[in-house]
Length: 502
Image (cartoon, rainbow, N blue to C red):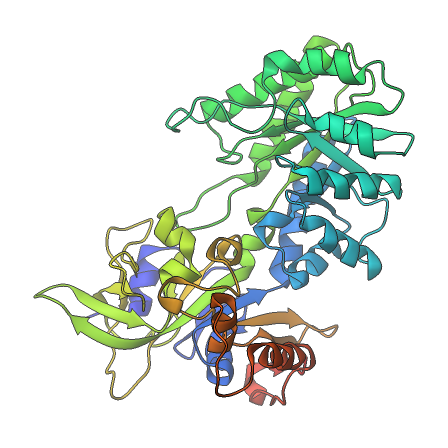
C-alpha cells in the first residue's frame, strides 16, 4: 500500500509554498509543527502572524497594479474588519502595514481607544463604522468624532442620522450610506436586512444631508455576503451599485468614495483556484467604465477584508486519542478536542478547511472519520472539499502518536464559539500559540493563553467552589501568568524555532 505522502502528492500539486514535509512531519509556512506539539501539547490553536502582513501587502499590490493598468485616478484604502478576529496580536500585526479599520459593534470602540493609547492607530486612521447601531454605539462614535478622529459612520437605517444630529458637536461629520443589496438567488431572503433600500437613498440625502452645515455624504457602502466572486450575481450587483453612485454623485459633489465590502476568498482546499489579479482588474475596469459612461469622476475605493486578512494565518492541531471501529467499515479517529466548540463553522455551516496529517507521512493510509469530544452526534468531520472521503495515516496506537491539523482557521472561530466562555459539554477552549519572526528571521513562539480552567467556567455559571482558589483569585493569577509568561525552554537547534518568554 502506498504512503500517505504518496496519496497527497498524487492527488494535488504538492508540496506548495505553504505546506511541505521534512523528516516525515508537516511544515506550515516552514514552521515545524511537531516541535510546537512537543513543547506545548494538544489541542492547540496556532496563529502564524507573518501571513497576515503577507496578505495585506498582496491586496495592496493587486489594486496598485490594476489602477496603474487602467490609469485609474482614485486612491485605494485597505481596511481590516475587526469582527473577523478582535485579538490584539492580530490587530497589531495588521496595523504594521499602514491600514485602516472597520468596526461593527459598540465594543469595538474601546479597542480602538486602547490601540490609540498605545500608538497603534492615530486620529487620521480611517474608522469605518458599520452595523445596525444601538444608542451606546452611536454615542461612542459621536465621542470619537468630537475628539477629532477620522470616523465615517455608515448609515444602516433612516433614523440613525438623528443620533449624530443630537450628539456630535464637531463642525463636520463625514457620512456613508450602506445600500441594501439583493441577496444571492439561493438565499432565504430577496434583499439584505442591512442597509437602506435604493429608493430611499436620494430622499435621505435631500432631507437630512444636502442642506446641513454639519453633514457631508462621502461614501456609498456595498456589501455582498458571499464575497468577491466571478459570478453573474456579483457583477450585476456591483454594476447596479455603481450606477446608483453615479446618479447620487451628480446631486452630491461631496460624494467621492465607495466601500466594496465583502472580502476576497481564502484557500480552503488544495484544489482552490482563484485569479486574484484578474478579479481586481475587472472590478477596477468596471467601476471606471461605468463612471466614464455616466460622466462622473471615479471614486476612491475602500475595501474591508476580514477573512482574507487573518484566515490563512490560523491552524488547529489535535491528537488522535482513540481508534473506534463502529461497524464493519466506519473507523473513527477520536480527537482530543471538539469541532462544535472549537471550529463552529465546520459544524454550523459545513465549512471545510485544509486537513492534513501532522506526522507519520511515511505510513500507509486509510479512510477515516474524525470525531470530537462532545456527546453530540454532529461533532464530526468526515469529508474534504475535493473528496467524499477523508484519509489519514494508519498508526499503531500503542507504539506511536498521530496528530492532525486543520488549516486556514484564523477567522471567526473564536468569536462564533464564544472564546473564554462556556461551551457545549463544557469543553475548554484550547491553548493558543502565536508564531512570529524576529528581526533576523528566526521563528519564535509564545503562549497567548493556556487551556481554559474549570474555575473560570464555574464563575460564569454562578458557582463558588469551596475548595481551592476562589474564581476571582484564580482569574487574577491566571491573567498575571498570561501577561508575564512562564519559564520556557529553547527548542532543539535543528528546528530553528525559538520559544520565547512572554
